[in-house]
Length: 583
Ligand SMILES: *Cc1c(COP(=O)(O)O)cnc(C)c1O
Image (cartoon, rainbow, N blue to C red):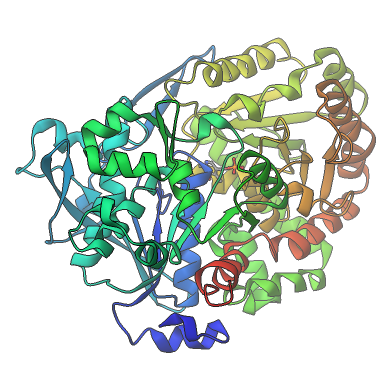
């Protein structure tokens, strides 16, 4: 039905009347949709949540599908030496979600497992809602082990994770059908975790004849509706499972089909391979990531659609008021943020300092540490994964000391959780604590526990500078600098991921290191980081605040207006969801 679209926006609104037909079913293992619902670990989940919010704003007939994760991701505790420990993050779905009555069945190792769903309504600016379905196996009909299958995000062993992915893929498709969604223009896999949905869709085509009897036109009927977004240039980011495990859980016919479809290699089944082989449209999440992904998967066509963040969600209340006053259309149409150039720089500066005060108050509430409002405040908060290099800033303690003595004071606010089994990630947090301790007399550093949506809102809007130091080319996109941009906060970053597109030196922020095409070189990056602070950023902040405020304004106009999910989802509509006729 949607293939007849000539131009999407007005038509989408009209089509809402075809109640159960969907343009988009968005599948993701994690969703960061609400600070009280701990079903996300980082950027992948935040992106999923922001995508649904943008779909709701546009009035798009769409749904999201994920797992309930009753015990959530985990709560993070940090000792005084930066040792991370974890506890379950239990939450009560009935306080936030509506329980639905339909049940569907998924087969695991030859035995049926029942799956129920809970619904969260994502409300758009215009009042349109997009439902997000959380699949749940905690039902009395199931065995104790099966009941726990939707408890932990990225928890358990290989078998646990694989069974979760069967529930997401097979259970998700079955649940959509039971809820009446039969016609879906695009099934979007946000990363490979949900790729088993492809088998479920193919099996529907064969009407019980089984995957061994699949005809080319049936395969084509599925492929033309599948969209796959890959998110990591790191091999460890791609899900692989032993073929023996797959055979045990899914049975011979499906496993043989996966092997025949070239999704298995050296005894391992690769979820990314399945998604790549059966999707009509595949993309990476920035221009640079497209190139890296193409080199990893050379026999596939891979495009780029750069990530965004949901503008209203990530704009602080103080900046929301400012935009409402000067550019009231910005909520409906984020492109109007371009007109931030008409906001007087003093207003930007004043509003920023309000957001900064709110952050510093929150830091004091959480830690008892009172940071100085007049001191240049740097923010760094991301999942504590090794390649993000949280401690790079501390590489040369001598240089930092002289910087502070000779140019001016600095304070730094950190955040970020390491995966419980990621020893290297945990070591990075300890390293920040050690370095900060050694420099205690020179600069204030606080590392906040429990980095989550609530904290990210404070941090990305309240610091003066967003620091980002990934090991290139491993940053697929990165999104927290985009959240900062919506609040006028400039970025100082290695040229990788989104920053290659967002960076204009001295206008939207500053680069660390040379051009993005140059080879990675840690020593040069470190030297560049300090010299940008010393020669450019600190003098600007301390001696030319009116010029710093003008940089803040151009950050909003240039990057806030573009790096948002409203632009992003329109690109998905034009290039992926509605483009199958022309492809
Ligand atoms: C935005 C966000 C992330 C992702 O940040 P990146 O810069 O993309 O790594 C992770 N965690 C939380 C809580 C966030 O809000």
